[in-house]
Image: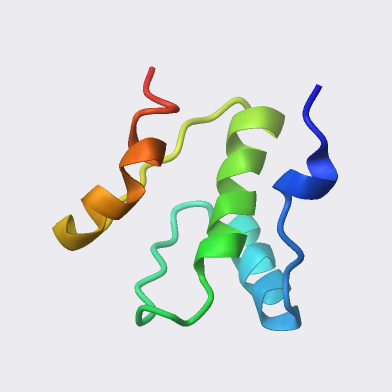
Length: 78
């Protein structure tokens, strides 16, 4: 069993607002600048889509980040 207290990040107030926006606008695309804190709410939203609603999500990233994120890129391929 997964310890969800270690999996779910603690979101800042702005990130909670972002998560609410994502949930109320399911086809949105967050094009904020790098380093603005969008990854934690995106991860929570992707988890909600997958585990709660049974939906899939699409992640895109610059090619320069592929090597850094390689361990995470093929974990949810159907």
